[in-house]
Length: 115
Image 1 (cartoon, helix red, strand yellow):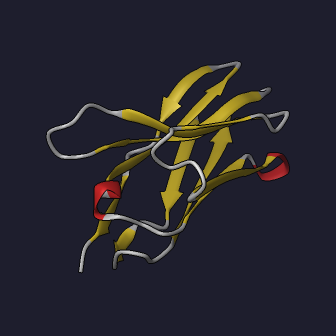
Image 2 (cartoon, rainbow, N blue to C red):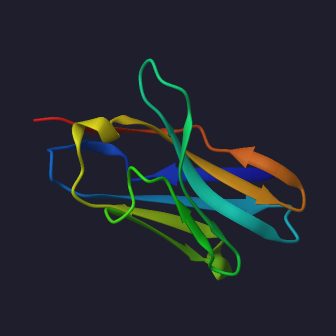
């Protein structure tokens, strides 16, 4: 049984910050990649950031320099620090996990950036 638990979403004003967390637990021998995708109203789901177990990161151009992804391998937890938030960042953010047991998605957490 695999469990993906997300937290940290909410409402924030433009220019503000949020920190998302995602913890994976269950029948994994290894988790290879963890990350975040998002889907805004009327748009396709897009990659935000990913990080491998070795620490290699990948960011969407739209968030580069504003968002930082990090990972605690011991806890199988990934974080997304979001700074200088813009209204365009408003979306449902989904945690993604790729491990030896397959690919898994969280239920999503709403991030709304609005004044």
